[in-house]
Length: 180
Picture 1 (cartoon, rainbow, N blue to C red):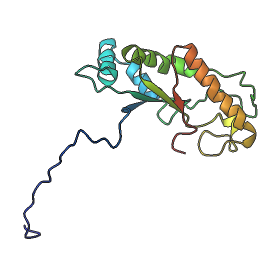
Picture 2: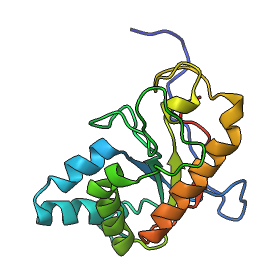
Picture 3: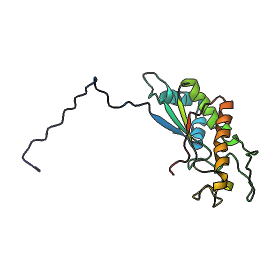
Picture 4: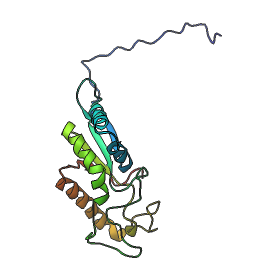
């Protein structure tokens, strides 16, 4: 079947290594509570092989250099949570009830294994939701952050960064929201 009279020639791509237009800082991977749980559930040798393939710098590794982690629960977590969950109707503007406990089970241990392989990896944290008591619909789905909690939510990020740092994990950047 012919659609024209000209022959189909493959284009030639010439790479000029002396001209640079942009650089690539690196390539990334997302570690959610769900993926951390699956990784932790692997046999130790298989887990080590996987993490080395992903985060190592050897010939058999893809050399991931950026890692996005969920700041609180994501849509791939086994449970819905924030680091400041409270009974309905309660608030905690001082964040006295802040706790990283959910992440200490799977996310933190996997991050430590990753950092042992690649201590130079950059970690970006992204929340799926503010604590529900800070939102106008009291739900982790939809809704908006209430203006009176803007500074409290900023402090929530600071407490998260500090809590991770206390566990030997440096958070290099945060986003205000995943897929706003």
